[in-house]
Image (cartoon, rainbow, N blue to C red; front, top):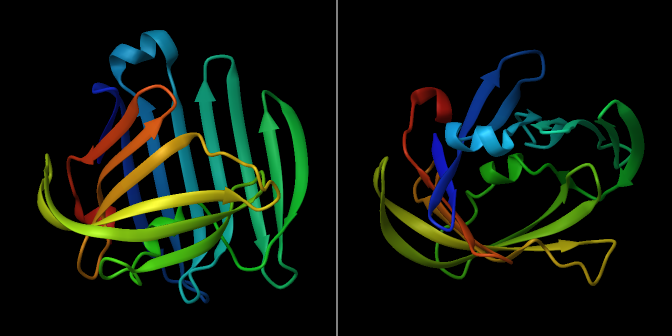
Length: 219
């Protein structure tokens, strides 16, 4: 369970969950949910959910779903990954209007699963790059460990790796992300749990921290 704020003002609550399902082909369900705080609901009420259905063996996504609800705007996105043909099929339904597109890729991940692919980052200087398809385009996400730090948040005190992400859109060389700089603190050890985030945006900064861990969140 996370709390997020803008310029130090509490604004958003979020959760991250992971569950394993034992079928003929075992799979994971990764889920992120977020909602505005009650005081902000009166001004701009948002309810968002992202889910990824991921093969347990390869950790490659089978499907990615987004549901966003805000004043005068409701969006549903479904992305299905065909790894044999290396094509992602995206269907957008926004305020009742449907759009579809196909996005070619090499070895795609989805935006949620990337949070669970940090095991290869073990010490300062380590870095990794992932191709991510979000339904609009494919991106190159770079993650670099820039240090170690013991941090205290509401959920407790943790030894963390400090990671700085970079983002590039593969079909737009001059693409500029919405954040100027982002820093993520994730726990060391077998399970990488994000415990703190700070992102400099064009006006002020967005920050978040872990406030509670439950067994269901990390199973």
